[in-house]
Length: 126
Image 1: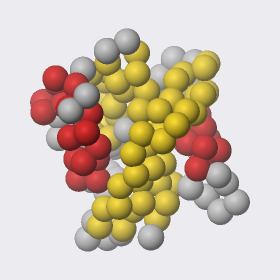
Image 2 (image 1 turned 180 degrees about the vertical axis):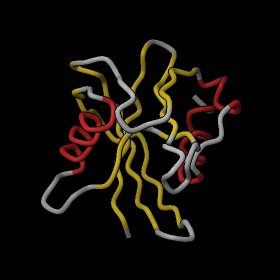
Image 3 (image 1 turned 45 degrees about the vertical axis):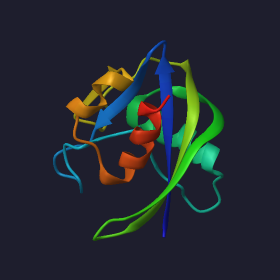
Image 4 (image 1 turned 90 degrees about the vertical axis):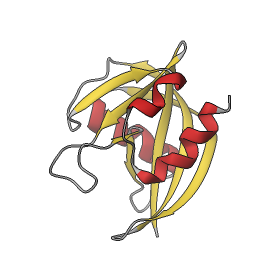
């Protein structure tokens, strides 16, 4: 099982989503920013590193919002989504096709990675 972390970053009533690059698995689907936990890293350290690499921001990582286990045809992920805030920087598209800030009401306008569906359903209930 692959340990994956992601950030739920709010800016008032909107949260940040990122569109995966076309050439990667699940290309052009939307997701929360984050990535794989490397050996020797805590989940929080991995999330800070991934967000610096992918969107050029430094995060303050908060509490866990939700944990999800999802089986894709090519891998099984244990996704931990953390509440987070941007401490430094402005999000840039270093790896993603696009970055958007959306409201909960706009979720259904975007095609997300299947692992995120349960999380999105929880957000809609807020």
